[in-house]
Amino acid sequence: MTILDAIIQGVVQGLTEFLPVSSSGHLAITQHITGVAGEGNLFFNVMLHVGTLVAVVAFYYKLIWSLIKELFKMLGDIFTGKFKWSQMNYERNLIVMLIIGLLPLFILFIPIPGTDMKIKDLAEIFSGAQILLVTAISLLLTSGMLTIGAVFNRRNTAVSFKHMKEGKQGGRESYTVLDAICVGLMQTAAALLPGLSRSGSTLAVGELRGINKQKALDFTFVLGVPSILAAALLEGKDAVEAGIDVEPSVIAVGVIVSAVVGYLSIVLFKWFLKSDKMIVFIIYTAVVGLALTVISFMEIASGTNLFTGQPAALFA
Image 1 (tube, rainbow, N blue to C red):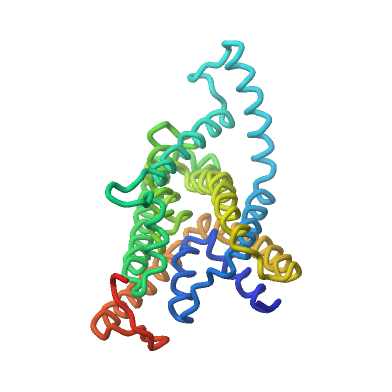
Image 2: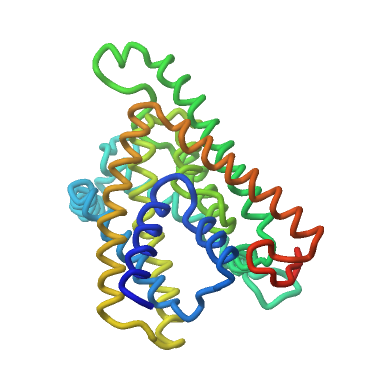
């Protein structure tokens, strides 16, 4: 792998990890077109995720630091019997809801009866499929979820019109237990389906539940910190066991590029959301999803990868 390859992959990772277009879906599409699965670069891929993790922490460092301080205060109140659910402030509510929102991820580790696989292993099967029909449908689901989010965001704004007069956005700012569970379940689904954007779908669920769009996006990104970290640790163990065959300088460039581009993509995403220009991502994911659906059915009919000419089957 060259420095140029590292830069290109860092840019793609940084953009697609946070913009609502699905990084896993675009990775699957890239591998399908090039015919390169990329298992040999597993450690490099893990480090790209570390770069995007740095981007989130850098952007939300004030919020994350306030949550860490509030966590210790909350633990102190719990041990001294002073903790009261009904009297939680914004930071304390966010901490509790983030924990609840992460719980559905444990579904991924449930064994699948009759096999030696866990539910999380389905993600690798879907993303590594010879024909990307699941990815195509998932991209269309992303477009649909973003549309639902946009519709409910307008409804939240209309209901909270008096807040807009005060210079505020429409919608609630605090999450409930049901809100957090719904977002967590959607994040779990996004972890399984390449093409279903984690940031876009969880944002949409928050808006559907009546949450302020900017607060919903903040919750989505902060929720991604432990999720990305856990994924990096789990994949990192496999990557080290598989061996590292990428130069340290190449890895460093990839991490820096993914971090910088990731930070800028968070800024860009928040601007698109604030400006009510999410239609760009709705159209993009719909067009790519439809195009990939057509290609998938053509490949099913021909039994051949249209890009590489290699044999392809819906079920390998």
